[in-house]
Figure 1 (tube, rainbow, N blue to C red):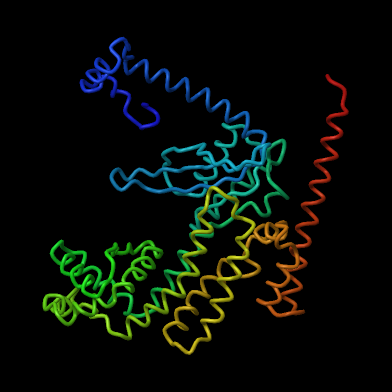
Figure 2: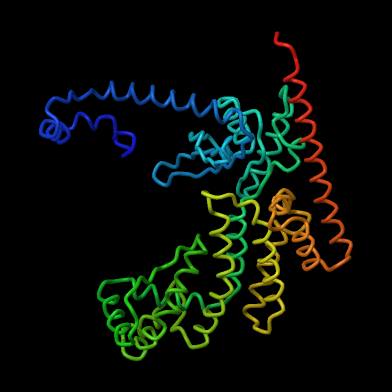
Length: 417
């Protein structure tokens, strides 16, 4: 109970718990907090040893992130191991959660190396990080250090070790696009902010929604740092457009709200019919990115095999919307394409994401070839270059597999020492 409910060890000393035990189970002898502490540490060491015996035999992919606690300003670094066991079951285990002195590349690389040593991990496939420059430096230092080990734990010398977080890249892409979309989003956000600012205003809004036969539902306000919350806010607001229009005609306070100043300027709004139409088109466009974010963020299933498919879908849609006659949508798509090319243009993308798609029996090399031809043009130098690069990586991976198999046969035939 202490572990499952994340209770403090001193919980057993509480009067309420003691009284509960005296009624529910009078014969139960309540252990002291020191006994609980000792037992939990012993259980942790036992479980860690069991997990270590499993994880040290697997090829492990790592993900890591750093964040700073807002209340204490202490920075923490977490490392999660992802691996598939002998029964082909996917596992995800947090193997390190520690305070860290700074966000420098050398510090991050040292923590990664210490974590591998602590858990006896000798085979690493990839390390996924966000796009902070310190992470680029950290993985360069990390690769240099582990290459000096007696046995190099990386695939192909760590050439494809660094994987950039796809969900984080999507966040950067969409944020750049939203910044270029104009005031339509701001006007709808202000309308939602007015409704959510007090209970009386929200009740007035609900009355008008019922008058238009709109079902009751949530009307959320977005968070500026999370674009997907903006998508959900706009999606919900569109369902209640009629109620917002009715408020504009009937609620004088609602109308006056948009005549007030905000940060020295007149507040943006009321949402016009043109604003609502812009938001409607924007939501249709952002749904592509929202679905891709859900796909990338899944942790219960393998995601690498369909990453390249999602990336291609995004690029195709960006190319289409960049040539749109709608000036706002075209401008937004062009800004997003710039950020897309920075991380996912053919020469920048980690080719293992493409190889994963090739190894999917539903796709194979034919699917990847069609994607290259659609993106770069059939028989173009860029298309041929990408296909050759993928085939070359698969050849190297196959040669490495053959080498491992020969080594395994050799070791099994060696006489015992």
